Length: 351
Image 1 (tube, rainbow, N blue to C red):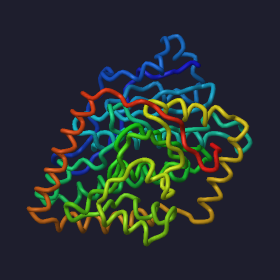
Image 2 (image 1 turned 90 degrees about the horizontal axis):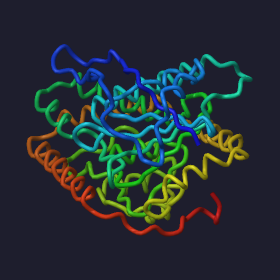
Image 3 (image 1 turned 180 degrees about the vertical axis):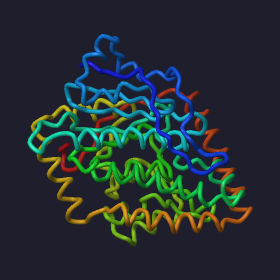
């Protein structure tokens, strides 16, 4: 399999306010390597990319974007600078990438063979998929009463979630590859994907209730569609952290595999070209039967913004304490050896 990645800068022009905007950092050479199983191609390979997908020839600061031309799959790896969360910079970069994917789809005719069939959202952080929102950034903005910055962050997050849930409105099948803990917004980003693959050692949950908040970027909408409103509220209000197997048994995730087996499981899934058409149709039918709209997500995230702006000093201290605990967990994961793998679990013994 040949994998291509880019070497040009990404620019977004996104800003929040005139002071201390969470704008995209200036771009430079990429510092984080992609997994060894995804080798970087030579520059001569990059120049052979078809013109419509040259936008992948970028270097991002907080993402690694890789194209597998055989399966027509974009692999998007999170590699945040700072906390293991959706930082404002990463959200800017995801916005840039998603807009260009949508522009590519718009440029193709209705009967053209799609240049991209799958999009996989994964992580390069050892033992962590994502800890969700950037709590230090949010606590700082709340203390400074910067509602504009909080609103900007929330709306950009739900834009990202909506694009994943809607397959970019062009039939791309989105896959979450969860190879570590997924909390709060991390779970929301995974839930927004059409198909969720989780490695068994992952811990999953919505701890926001610990600091008097709730996951406001889609968790209620997506959990209630999968499980019903009562179970969605039970999960969110409990603040409980679940195992991968527990989330599978509830119906939250689609496939649980052994630690270290997630990437291979995703490759098997997207490599089965015979089922792409049926999968695309099923996920379109899901969206038609119980549509997740951008308006719904934005309305709910406005409730989240209002709630965040009313957090007390004690709530904000708990938020910062949780961020510190997440950082300690990151250090522990980085120092721990990988667990042994086990056999994948699938509904009815199928994919």
